[in-house]
Each structure stands twice: as structure tokens, then as C-alpha cells.
Length: 334
Image (cartoon, rainbow, N blue to C red; front, top):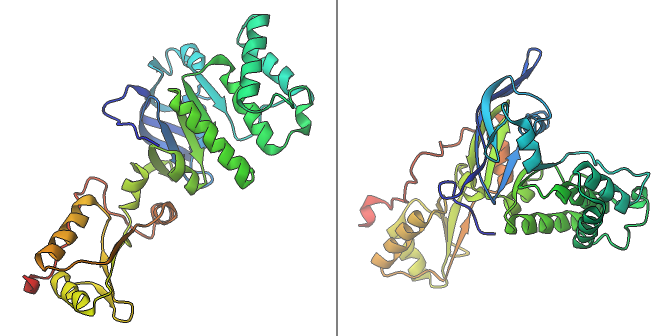
């Protein structure tokens, strides 16, 4: 999906130094956020990292102990009602009332938003159709599957036409098909201009959906960037060159240096962060040596590697603001 530039887009959510403690336990220890409008922002973190607390603060459900925040252009502390009018929240646990029908759940939400009877019915019918719930609209919500309840939950959230939606682990407990359906719903929301603040423990979900990802650990944001930027923080990426001509293979090894050789497969593996700059450097050295690889593949760490490295405290990734260093072939090859 297309990405949004943090510098070019209006800001939907911003926070500076947000803090929250419960007794002597610090849950949020001064986090900063800047989320462009019309984008998907994913907050990752292990259980107890503070993800839900951040959502509750930004959606005015609880107060912060310190820091400042603006949501939809409104100061969180000074104008909470204006913030509530601009947002929708879908929590970890469904807000659907299983004792009434899907349609009745929608109409109840319309009443809460002070829509007229006719407008409430119109909006409810449109959303039920949009989320493929029309056939089940007259059935008790208790009979719905987990995926249907989640779709109804989000449909209820959209009754008030929020500009910003907080989705707190929206696919927890769903089967793979229902998860993918939910991903498509999120994409459609964003394509319509809605900003989505997503918390999740599913790394593939953040990789698939998010324009920007922040990793929350011990109450602090330990890294933030696009999925590709975060993957480049972790060592282990490499470029693999495959040759069919043994002479070309030997010439490339001589020109590049510091490569892991596989003489049987005629492949060379070079450490790389996968950046365009570094790939260009490798290709330039091959061209200078008059060598052409038959196949070039780039392997980068996935978000699982990033997550474990950033939250385990065992691996210390490079800082995001350090410039990429291009591959340096051995001096003697010149």
C-alpha cells in the first residue's frame, strides 16, 4: 500500500512525553508520537508493554500523568469532547451486545450519536452491507462467528464517521481468513482518508498494513520507522549472488571480497542492509570487474527478528539515525 510521508501530511495524532504509572509501576515512560493523517500506524509490543494504555489515553478513556497530546487537532486535556467526536475505538474485547440483533446494535449506536431515526436506519443499512452483514442483520449477535462480531464491532465504530480509528488488537482470536478480511477492511478505511492507530502482537499484520511502526518496550518506544527501515536495524541481512560460469564466480569473489563462498552452488553471500545505495555499490564493482551474476537476491531480517532483538535486551541494533554504510570490497581487488 502507498506510504504517507510524515513531513508532507497533516498530523492526526501527536504526543510528547506521554507518561502513565499505576502505583510504583511505570507503564508509559515519556513516549513521543507523530502520526500523519490518512495512514496506518502500528504500535507493537509484548504483553504489558503499554499498548492498550496508550490507546486509552489517546481516546480519552483515562488520563495521562504527564506529557501533552493532540488528536484530530484538539488538545487531549483541554478539549476531550472534541477529540471524542472525531474518533472511533474498537477495543480488544467486542462491544457487541449478543442479546440483540446486529441491526439493533447498529441502531443503538446511531441513537448514541444522536442521529435521527431515518438517518440512523440509512447509515446502519449502508454499513451492514459494506461489512457483508446484511443477511445476518436480523439474527442475534450471539450467533455470529468471531470474524462477524469483529466486523460488526468496526461497523458500529464507523456510525459516527470518525476521522481517526483506534483498533486495539482487532484480529486477536480470528482465524486466518477472518484476519485477512479484517486487513482488507482496514485498507479500505485508509483509502477513504481515515487514520488508523493499530496495536497488534501479530508482526505480519504490522508488516502488511502499517506505513509506520513503533516498538514499545518497558514503557518506551525503542524504535520507529517503516517496516523496511526497522528491518535494516538488525544485522543478518545479505545479498546472494549466483553464477553458472565458474570463471565469473571466481572473478566476482576476487573483486568483491569478504563474501561467504559456496563453491558447489557457485554462490557468494555478502552482508548487506538491502539499501539501494549498497546494492548499487555491489553492482558497480561487478561491472568494473566485467562480471555479471546470473541471479541476485536480497535477504533482510523480518519483523520477528526486529521484535525479538528490540524487546529481549540481548541484541543492540544500530541507531536509526546512523547512515547506511555501502559494501566495501577488499582493497587488493582494485
